[in-house]
Length: 218
Image (cartoon, rainbow, N blue to C red; front, top):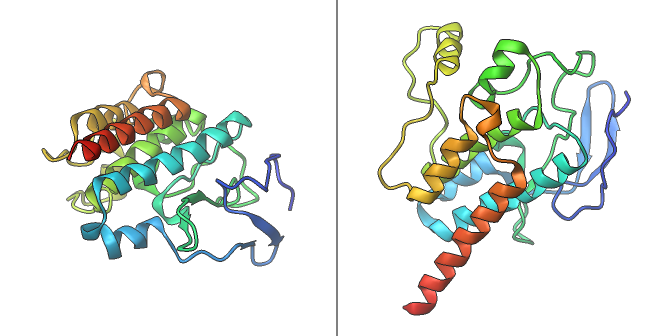
């Protein structure tokens, strides 16, 4: 097995990988309590809007560092965002290792609800396709729901066609307007209209600052 990327494994914002095994393919990581998917399932009704913003802020910070190294994750989803109760930072794992090692970089793999429409059509991944996945993650964090769990399509092919034609997760009135606008930009059908990870990070930081300012006024 060879790794096709170089990344600072000491970064405090990435899940540290200590080693790999080939058969079966396994990563040896720091201990983490749970992934984001299970965290939301168990704790969603007890976490605040501020905490949700902080989760998104941590993820986009990590993603920005990955993209700065010209690396495309290709399988960003709530199952690979890890949390340890000993600290408060969410970390991205499975950097480039989540797909089959014998498949080229333009082969589709991953969790269908998070895959960008242009990837489905052209099988070409980019940092912008990661941003689409980030938009779906933002929806998952703010709603606590599994993306597209309520879809009524009879087959994956019908589901895929709907995504290509603009089908996205349900929009709820309680989602804050600025957050909603940013989220929808992330999953825009045109990759060129999507912000980069650092822009998302800065806008979420601004939302966090606004919440703190509101709390100070109380």
